[in-house]
Image (tube, rainbow, N blue to C red; front, side, top):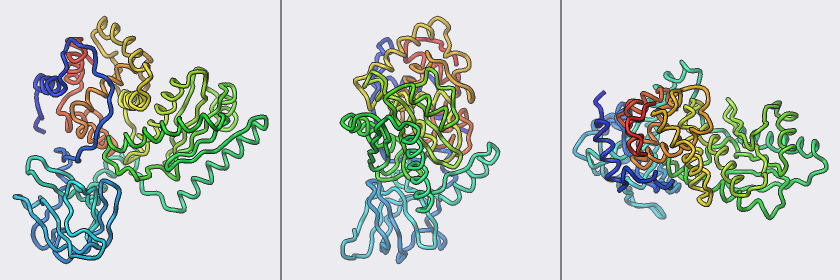
Length: 428
């Protein structure tokens, strides 16, 4: 496959775009703003042909549309198509006038469309054509399913109402067991749009942490171009939080059959059936607890994106550290961890040898490097970062995904990142 750019050209583009001096400190961890999805090279296999008798868009057809804002329209009658220069592209859609319905919609507002008896499609920008294309979901899902089969993973299906109700009941059942196991504690339950927090914290302390969870959810939806009213969870995401460390450890050992929690303040429990839950204890630092809460729940969010496919530890931990810093900016957690990592990176000239690996875990000192590397990639091209994670979730190895999105090999990524943090010649 043709390379997008050389490592040096890539680095120059990054530094010019970000306005950073290569001798300066690493960039401030910052969130992302919504940008249209732009097609990547590996996605071109899924583009639908729009011309001819068999194209999915024809005048008189009924379309169901969902916008990036989350708003939906049903049974819009297509009355006109502003076509692009190529047979696969379009620049606008017009609809038969109907009370309360739009007569035109700009493609940059669209997330997906369904053609009655004609399939489901993602709407994606094609900057090279200055137009938009439709990606055939059925074709994409078929190919992704085949890739994932070799790793015994699967695409997530949208949970049915019955599955959502069953999941919510299982979360309540576990809460009942907790209350029975700890009769001396007073528990409360607080629910938001996408989360349920079960805790023995005083009621007045919960709102701020729930707001952190909601903020994390909205920012990750923005990063991954998911309409913000989308519920990615099965039911919701339950969070079981204790004030006391010993109570947390007893809960894990007795009710979750997990006795190995010494030195752990929070965990993300991700199941093969798609259910996710976060468990944790508050401890004595409100700010650090907020970091732990967001970090662990972000692991669950990644688990629910697209498939059960596994994200390599340096990406998984890096994104979780990154989003925790975005949501809890008053924390110096990432800064401290990167300050710990930088002299080690300089002394050994390497990310650690097994840092860019598919299995195992990264070491404690590598978390800061993973967070700043995540910021580096997102700041370079948030759309490519989104596509890289998606490609992994569709069965590509992370090395293949890096190549088909950023156009880099692992060695080139390490070298570019090293130049960026003033460690020339950095190796994986």
